Length: 243
Image (cartoon, rainbow, N blue to C red; front, side):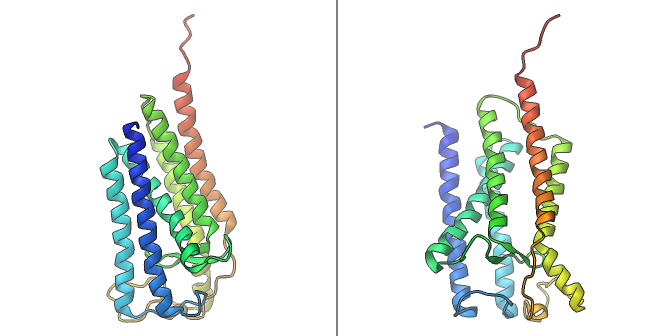
């Protein structure tokens, strides 16, 4: 087995285990706060549990970044392994929730995705699409690096990736922000120093409509970046002609 194959295998196993750990925590939280099954509106969470959950999400991201840094041999590969670990973790989080709780009911079931810096919500299929895109980009980078080709993510590539990521994230928080703006509450971000319950300001919030247009534009920017990377790699394969 090639070293790179072993690395990807170990990262996959690690990320699947992380996915189970994440889903098991959610099982406990739902038993406490949603004994009849998870559904919107969100139930207010006490400050001590909210802080614990908030920091747990930060710790999870740090662990995934750490896995990418330790597995990668250079900056581009470390980035690729981080997003790969994140993607596998995210997909298997839902796989294990389906096994343990028979949830979600469908890929279009709404879920709360993150709390940082405020709630992200969206249908389950949306983060899964993002995860598959991450895996696709990782495989492109790893495949060409194994062919001894220098994979360079240029400034314009990074701009498309960052712009796409910000736009996708905006689609996840869009419905929540629209709810707050319509209902006149000035509190958008729950902070660690807050003495109030998490979700108290949105105790009546039920997601209405996911902004698929914004999500699609974000995904489009990311795919443009991937296509530009592939185009540069393809151009390097062409033999130079001598006139």
